[in-house]
Length: 64
Image 1 (tube, rainbow, N blue to C red):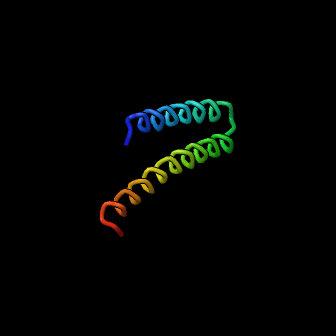
Image 2 (tube, rainbow, N blue to C red):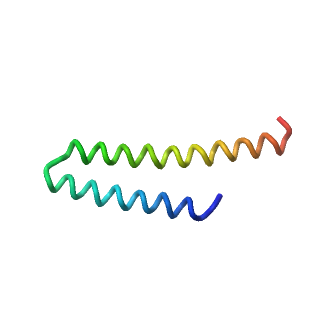
């Protein structure tokens, strides 16, 4: 695992939090929720790729 992944996740989290606050203050709660969900999906896809890579490494390590 690379430290850059953590920085990317943190940057996405900060960006989504700022966008969420701006949209809520503007009275657009629906768009704020969609922005939050989109950020969550992006981060989950990044994490799932890393977990898949981990499982493939374990599979090759134990010759499964």
